[in-house]
Image (cartoon, rainbow, N blue to C red; front, side, top):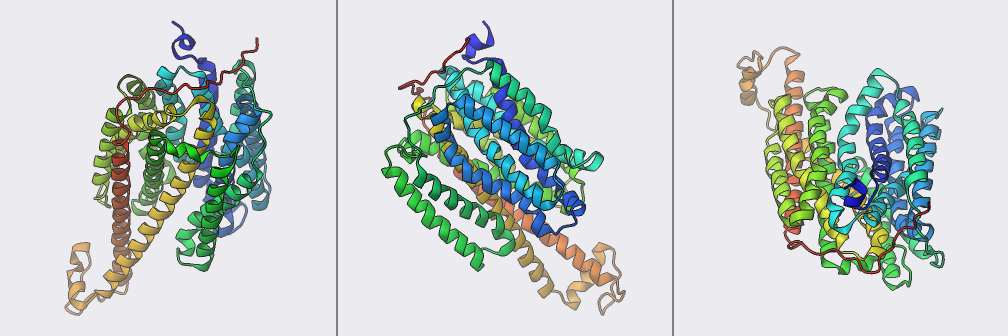
Length: 512
């Protein structure tokens, strides 16, 4: 029995869609490592260069909700080809950029393609695969979603440190060309719904609402949650997105069908995905910061530490999908989430005394849980959706994943910084002659009057900052434990193995 006969989809189509998604997700992560180098090359400030990352996040989050409607209107294959072409062209332009302004502009073009690649590729995989084998197929697809973010720091660090930062963009050109050729030749055509009118009010309110929300979340850790700018953007996002919800629930042909949340399994699955995205992306933000600022590792070393975990996740994605096909979502996900929760509890005690190997092992076992649980949750929710609504469901899940990831990163970043500052101020306020007599454990030589060497006090304050930074990291890890525990409770509500829904199947048109 061939791969296509067993799973209902050609292995070349699986490879092509996974490759496109992997490229888009990886590129969004490797750019973070290149920010210091870009700042130096373009002789700009941190505030300006940060827009290279921020603008991609905003553009992607703004356009993702419309991707499902566009896929239905014009057909998955055409939209996937367009998205891959735009992303590849945008990548080449980013690599050739001559100023920070041109780089930021070209990142918008790149994001226009990247925003549609993930939900459209997911819809393609679901539409072509056999319902009873979707777990395995989505496991292959999930490799790109989970493996790429973990691999990004290693790849980006190597290219920036040993070659040139422009390669993080130029490397997409050959990959994109290969993907375009394979898609054009091997992917079947999908009929579009030409009679469906575009939901202009939905697009206007969703794009502006998600732009305001994502900008506020990305800027809140630096500007402060109570600053006038952040409060204004959050207020605008609440008003616009509330209007968007009302419009979509009353529209005949909504851009994003929010009525899908009436399906209990899909709703529970989507919320669990959002919580897992918060925990996953939050850890991917906290851990590299601790490794580099706390332990003094280079970006490449920090990437190498997370590499085994990324490999384990990639290997276990299809295995988790196969287990889902056999026994359902709840037992597989419950086991995986329990492993994630246990390892997250261990990370609460992370400190400067932990070795490279100990951190790597804990992160790797946490990745085992991530690899087993992520795709079964996604597939359980999508299996409960009628096939004609698959594109709407993938766009909705992708939107929730983007917003939740940004929210998790913003919350954990704020918690880490705020608690570290509070702890340091607390340490400083409690410094006394008596407490300074105890610093001999750090190798200083105090007298009865405290340290007398003028270099001792800076060393003491440096140590206190390190202790406060560690305390802030540990406190942020506690938040990830709470988020992971909430995700585990949501997963238990999915229920036993459910049957897939195949009402009103939408089949591709095979063109010889």
